[in-house]
Every structure is written in structure tokens, then in C-alpha cells.
Length: 275
Image 1 (tube, rainbow, N blue to C red):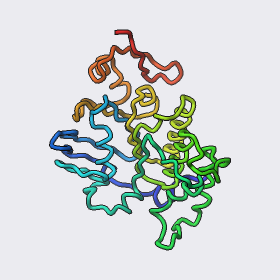
Image 2: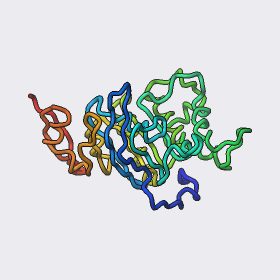
Image 3: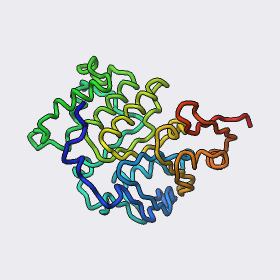
Image 4: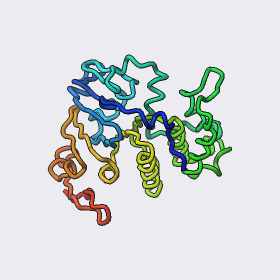
């Protein structure tokens, strides 16, 4: 299968981290939401951000995407202050997929996927990639969307719309993908399908991924590294093996955990004990 990234993008190498936060902080109505965040993400890494509700996970994604600006400190994108980039340049570099996916609008699936090419289109609507139509065909085949190509979004289930949203992100060909609880509205089977599609795409393209995940077992299974937030502060970073410890989970989520290992892939998995 043809790679999902242009050859030129594949050969771009950067000495600076893809994302770096230096003493980053954010407050709303004078209430701190994030404080003193120092963090680096290197090219090709897959980070999961975990923590209880209200810990600042979504706000961190908003800072990284450029949707919000820090009140203190700095967010650097490839070594430059993110505020120095145009919105179009950021859209070429970064894609965001939230738990809601796409609103149920009356647009056909293929047209929605094509919207992901917007950052690469001229004002006349001409795509700079000659094989853009072939790219869309590949994505539809991969995500099992061919039978839905002409169906409007408002006739699809929430899980189907999430697949279309993922396809639109793939069409965007970003170097950095930000995910905010992307499997929330998917059933168990499609949660696994989604995470496998994502992992396969990452291995092919070298894309960097940062995902907010509430499902710690999925986070441990697919992420290289985890960042734990609580009350707006970084608590710990490390591999799933390092963070998925009973003491850490107990402290973060106020639950009584039992950690076991997956019988096939030997990553830590969480069970809950009766308190």
C-alpha cells in the first residue's frame, strides 16, 4: 500500500523536539488549570496523557494544538514558539480528533474525507498532491468506508462518524496527531479496530501521536510513554510499565487497583478491587 505521507515529508528531519512545553501554565477566570508543565515529545513517539477528570488533559491538547495560548511559559513546535506559525501551517502539521468526531451534518462521506485536504488546496480548490483522489480511495478502503461513500453523515451511527473523522484526519497527512478520548463512543470491537488502525498508520508514516485516554488498559497496550496529570500538574512520566503501578494508580484515581499482565503482549493491565 502506498504510504500515507508524501516522500518529501518522510525525509524531513528535525533536531528539536516535535513539541516542547517550558514552564507552561493556563488559567481560566484566574483559576489555574495547568501549572509549570515541562515536557518534550520526540518525533515518532506515542504518548498517552492520563489522569482524573479536571486534571488539565484537554487543556494541554489545546495548548499544543495552538487553539489556546499559555498564560505563562511557552509551547514550542519544532523549536519555534507555536504562536509564530500561521493557522494554515499548523493545520498542515497538526491534526486534532476529539471524542465527538464529526457533527451529523448532511455531507457525504467521501466529501468529508476530501475536506481533510483543505490545508493543501489553492484558493481555486486545486490540491497540490496530484494523487489526492488515490489517497482518499486508500483511506476509504483501509477504514471500511467504501460502502458508505455517498451516505450523508447524518445517516450514520456515532461509531461510523468517528471512523469518517479518523479518515478525514488521515487525509490531512499531519506530522502530529492529537487525540482527545477518541474511543469514547465506540463499542469494544471498534475500540480495538480504531487503535490498531492508528498503530498501523503510525508505523507506516512515522507520525507522532499524543492521546488523552481514560481507558488505562488501551493506553498501556498502545502507547510508548505515559504522562500522568493531577490538578493541573505533572505527576510522573514514563513507560506504561513504570506508571501502571498500584501505588501510582491508587494515588491518581482514588481506587483500589490490581495490576496484571496481558497474557499475549505482556503489558500491564488494570483490574479494580472491591474497596
